Length: 587
Image (cartoon, rainbow, N blue to C red; front, side):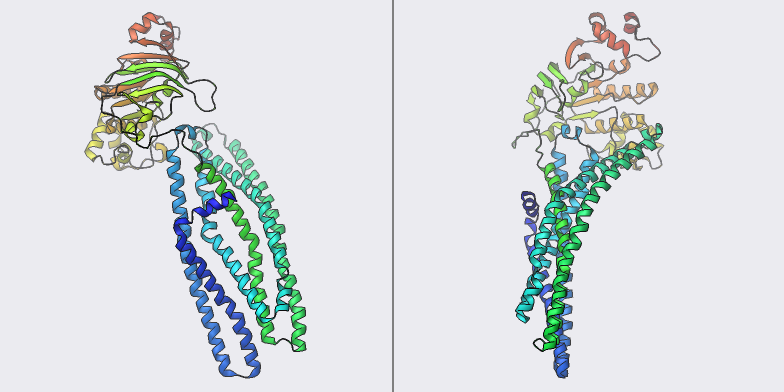
């Protein structure tokens, strides 16, 4: 019930619209209920031969029909506005909440699962809040008004006709209680299916490269089968309860035909009154049959609402003070004091008691085997993750106590697999600075050695890049990402294997550009190529999350066996990993 109440809370901004919708629905039902009464009077008037009254009654039926039409149209328009408004608000709230969550949250979530919640689940909630509630209210209005009219016509006959109603209500609520967990499981399995489909589409290149289409189809069929099996459980509940709910009013109809028909024969009930009574009973059957569907819709919305609230109730793990100041002015001095980092769900620390000072304007290369903590360390600078112990300071300010937006405006990261949006080349480069001029964008592209291949694209900088930039080569994507970082003009630049996808010739070109860009800017370089590491003023060697050595390339080769081993393994494949240290130093 708490989930249902919280769902109703989304209607708070639309109280007037909801009230108007219910009022119009009630007015439409009043007009609807008037039609059987006027019809019955018209039948009795016909038998009496009163043509004048018959004309007026016929006009009354027409007017009632027109009013019902007008009120119904108005109700649908207002309810539609409420429904779309709820969807707009809820979608915006979900998206903004997702943006506020820390990066660690997404490390353990499937994209398809999240997409299912903001699409399938949201649609179920939107339909119920915008239309389902009104339909339920309309059904109740119909039952109450028709019941009152029937009691006014013939109380005894009304009691017989309405006798099945309590049983209908009890069975409908029993159906709702049993269908809720079934529908919730359906929603979960649909989310799993969505996640599987999203993963297959995103990884289609790998699937085709390894000819694993049949395997992926089997996995997808398994997910579809799970949805089918669970949906059949919900369908069986619907198949049993919905017809049963629709059957009970027919018992009242049979009783009315028998008892009311005898009263007409005996002359205690006129044919017009019997016709009106019969029409009222038919009017009741529709809403009663709808109760099963409407309660099922409510249960689906509640199940979807529970999944949505599960996401909304996930508070951001990163605490941002309400009055957090911007990052103070400076040139990018970085200091780590006893920093440790453990990712959620991992027993091993990614960083352990790291102390490191990087002076402003210097370039530091982070070297170490895979899993040594290089990327984890630079991820702490823009506060993509929070250190579990210790402090990270930039220009003397603790990154956890400043405004994250101002912090991230001063740090640019270029990864080994950069993400590009499905937008133009210009828009991708200008992503960090949407107000950048075309000249500034082109300058950044030239500095990143991207202008050459951009000029060969069909529409140059206005060429639309495919999703995730897959229409470009790996090296082209990296150069676009480097241009994007350069245009941001950060005080701290992080190059995380940023030239891994380019050939040796292009790498030399980019290195020359990076030398210019890195001058006077604090830069962290993560690379496995010694040629890229040579850009650094100093090298920091990491192993198992700890700083094990620090110095220049020549100093470390002479003093640290671990660095010599890492350096040797980082050489091109044509050189043996056991190459003598003298040859490594010569490079």
